[in-house]
Length: 206
Image 1 (cartoon, rainbow, N blue to C red):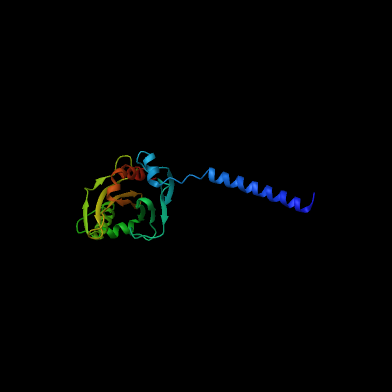
Image 2 (image 1 turned 45 degrees about the vertical axis):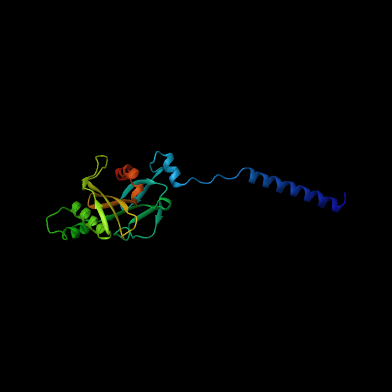
């Protein structure tokens, strides 16, 4: 067999291999990943797949759909943990305050107020100061499923006129000598089905 014949045979084998590979790729296209909304809908409108996270002395569980952010426009503390599901414009934040910081908040109130109330009410006041129009629910004790004393409240409002309002689920917990503020923040029309998720998040804090 001549050299030309060998080259011809090799070329034919290469062409057959390429064609076979092309057929496999085009015949079996990869499935597109499911969107965050699809995953929530499949999970009975609950945030799916909770994972364990740690922040400054506490552990908590949060859906793996959240991505870590490196900015802190929605919080007070520079070292807060801020996460987001971009597709849903849904944010989660957690930050801690020391006892000395809680005492500083106490001095801002004319009436006598304990440290837990001071942290919660001061944080609420700072939140309301950023909103042009707002509605605030009654401050309530956290549900019995939460392992630590604290308060929970819901704020709705927009930072500017004619802007779509946001809803802020906010809870303040006292754990030993520290105070933690946790928030779930999103578009008002989406937050009705996420209140139970927020309760589960704060109930997971240890």
